[in-house]
Image 1 (cartoon, rainbow, N blue to C red):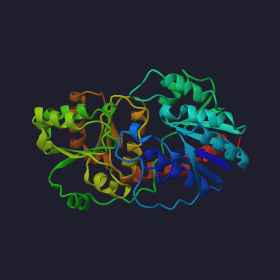
Image 2 (cartoon, one colour; image 1 turned 60 degrees about the vertical axis):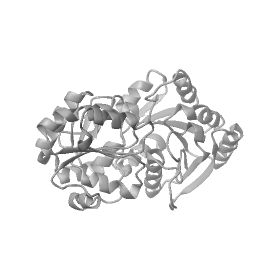
Image 3 (cartoon, rainbow, N blue to C red; image 1 turned 180 degrees about the horizontal axis):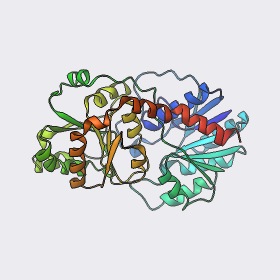
Image 4 (cartoon, rainbow, N blue to C red; image 1 turned 60 degrees about the horizontal axis):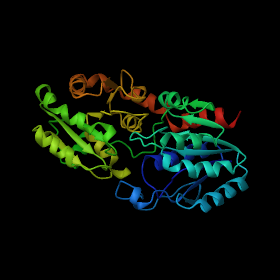
Length: 369
């Protein structure tokens, strides 16, 4: 048996969704898996969004036990005891925030089986004084470390001498099917004569939305038909972005849909756009790039972290994180759009980077050793 410690439905968001995809793929490949999830993940005062929970019910085809309250150390000890009773081959801890470090370390230290830290982000993009201490505390409680980008692996070498395994960020083939651009634009009431750029996902300072907005005055001169769709839940005030568009006189070029997008609506936004733009100022890897690959949409990414690892000469372009470079690369992308529309290449990439491929590598590397 493999035990995964991670949030799962009814928690919403990329970590919960991709954890479910990972487990489903492991189960399909014959592994027995049990997920230990949370009763309380973040206290309401610390959660920047509107809600941590998905609406509606979702059937999970694997065992899920909600036992962990991050505010209650007794729940950590009870969780460790229940995990140990299962005598698993491997216990995998999904880590992306220092908030979980002490909780995870306490559970891990009470378990004798092999423990692996699955690290999405080694350190937060908006860092605090204790972040490195908390990361080191957690890493000290595990036996091995799994990463989804070379950038995170390199970062973690500064913090641990434990065995580091580098994989890739998979494409989730269980997302809703793509829909045609014509239908998507019609449903969203978008003008089909225009070119659409999509900024998708949580809106946070490090993601560089301000850089992208600042690129629009230059872009208007080269591509007057370009429009920007800003789609996602804000984890900061949107006032500065709206004021920025007004001060630059680009209000007419930007459409804000600043709210959480349920999975069922994702195909609309990716279907409607011509390019996905990730103007990040800092990054590890991105879950947006695999999403774009799933929907056969090219990406423009900035040269930070491992963002560029997710694109090839047929699926995207890379530029520096500044308004001029973004404007120039968007112009290039819209001009040469046909060079990035090879659906057969996207399909081969989808299979190569699928959760199925990820789990085959995971089993070979971490289970059957």
